[in-house]
Length: 192
Image (cartoon, rainbow, N blue to C red):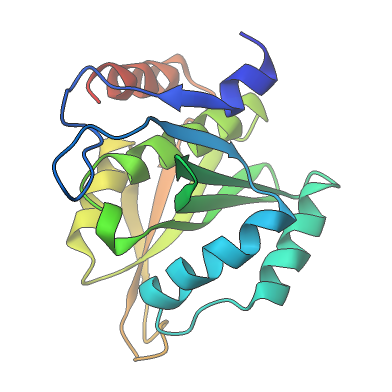
């Protein structure tokens, strides 16, 4: 499988209900691909719904500029013509920091965040990163469960980190280059 095939490929699970549209009909496959500037206008409505203090379009433009020099990695997930989610990595000192994983509220609980995080985790592994880090709102239990599934563990708390003064849990996933990490990702791929 080529690198391009890895990034632009349908994500089909073994479950028949993995991607069902709002009317209950089987929908088109989720496709994960590198984020491009043209995606930003479709990202912004999700960003504004998901985050109380959303990034601006200009922040996304600047982040994408960093992908050209290998300092960032951003993905989008689409179903048909609809952009349903996105995620990103920032590379620092041999580690990968998850900058964001966001899924449109209407498309949640369908495995999209799992697919985005899988691609981000494989990319961190491919890039030789030793660890992955992220912050998650202490009240976002669903996201914490997802991250634990990937091997992230709480490593600390950033008090009053968010705009509403919520605390952030800092989560860390060590051993990204270890065979056990790749095996964990393969198991997640098999159970989606």
